[in-house]
Length: 264
Image (cartoon, rainbow, N blue to C red; front, top):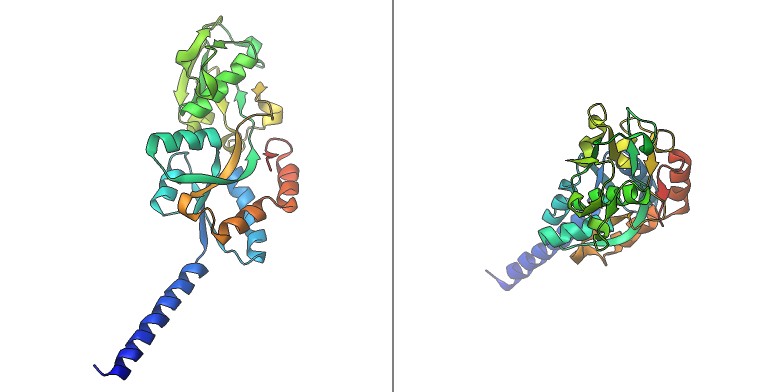
């Protein structure tokens, strides 16, 4: 091959490389969310981000496990559906290299019932559904402790489990269920704790229907997460800026009327 041909080949390879890089930057950023409020909010974030040149593709999930697995595998660029205690547990259990990059909203968890109108009405031996993941299950037990129904070991922390219950005057029985399925248990159980992002699609209004609710001041503010290697990339800053805008704050306050609270 002549010197001129070599130079042509090198130039063509360089153009292909530049073209590939351009295509990679032009593709939409894939964001994993759970169905319900997280998806609704991100539809609004998408509009704002596009004004800043950031294209977003929203991918909906129906559980809490897959969005982190998909992010770690590279099938997503970011996700927005979890709070930090949950992410910390996932990182510990599964060795994910996933990090938080910005806070989003808080969903005060509520307890619901079709059989009683208040926690005080729960009878001895009542069956109470709680999420089967350690962070959200512990979250519910802390609410029940705050309401005086149980007492937990002093060192139980945020990830308390039914095994940490040391006083249970009503002998409540805890039924651990996948969080997304808890709304369906209300016909069978005496009460169930439902995360707000699953309660709203199920027709449950936290302000109207919950017989008890978590305080808004909690460590469970949700967040946007990305792979550790991506945290300093320009698109991440654009994404967080779009979410934490005044327009999104007003949308959340107007649309959800206190059931979802801005955490930024």
